[in-house]
Amino acid sequence: MDLITVGLILLAILFLMLGLGVWIAPALIAVGLVAMEFFAGAPAGSILASNSWSSSASWTMTALPLFIWMGEILYRTRLSDDMFAGLSPWVGRLPGRLMHVNVFGCAIFAAVSGSSAATAATIGRISLPELKARGYPESISLGSLAGSGTLGLLIPPSIIMIVYGVAAQISVARLFIAGVLPGIMLAALFSGYLVLWSLLNKDKIPPPEARMSFGEKLRASRRLIPVLLLIGGVIGSIYAGIATATEAAAVGVVGALLIAALSGSLTPATLLDSLLGAVRTSCMIFFILLGAAYLTSAMSFTGLPAALADWIVAMKLDAWLLLVALTLFFIVLGCFLDGISIVLLTTSVILPAVQAAGVDLLWFGIYLIFVIEMAQITPPVGFNLFVVQSLTGKDMFLVAKYCLPFFLVMVLGTIMITVFPDIVMALPKAMIAR
Image (cartoon, rainbow, N blue to C red; front, side):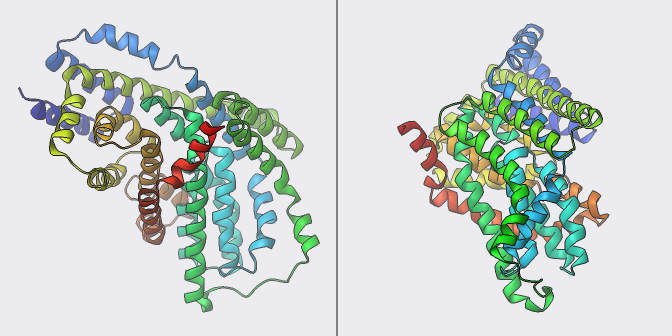
């Protein structure tokens, strides 16, 4: 049986199982077992046992539960209230005014959360009622929240960056640094769209609130100082070479606990809730990692990834044509799967082809996150759409309609990092030069 037929059979089995509601991790393991037993002739059981250990016994992966716990701690503090109070005085004179709080608030929380859904939920819980009470249009408020929440994937520390780094076997610290400039760029693009929209729809923006003096603005922003120090401690320690990603994660947890304690939010109940939340999320991700690692081994035994890479080389396909095809593929895949599952499901087959086309895997990781960000706001399985729907009770497809401009902004951002790859690579190169 030729490899194309084998690939189609395995793909059909996988989508059948996912369509029947089977959990992603067991579905991946089941497809791997079928590939091993029927198409590879390899010892399926012993390879599953060895993969179960090797996929979890990774020093790099210890950063994952720590960053998740850090986000869970801050999710249960008054951080979102502090950010709204601290940011609103500075954006009151920008075109669009308080709508920018969604963008800047999500960007700041993304730098201490690592999760897109947690970012959107935390900021939306305080910003949406405030924007509605002040008369801001619902469409732009919900769209900007769902769109800006995706910054939780791109601005480090990002959970999905750790997963990709382990899958692609590249430095997580370099991935974190590579995400800084693209994250700032995307936040600026979101904010720029809000400026443009508000200039074209001046009648829909409430009048400005009372002007505050510079000193009053500084006093209102003092609550932002702890979280800004935490961001500086986590990202700065990595960039300066003082700490690895795992050590920086430990610094982040200690800092998050201090912020929670100083804000009066650290109680035995919230500490236990944060631990349980981190354990649940970490176990889910590690289970999927196990399944993906096993499927990767199975694919290697069948020879599919090598054959695909050879096919790419034989076609002499330009890198940009491959990226266009992959962008469409990932957007479609994102309609049915979450971001982590997309990374783990596709890397074993896609990365050899990407390398064969001469694409840098570090840059490709940031590109992949941009495309997965788009998937976060595409129905029917856009996680950020679920978050906004749960906060507001609005129909998910209506929220998706509100998100369309921000989806197009992400497309623009993807084009920019493709045309100007140094947006991604400049800081990692500077890090190596040091």
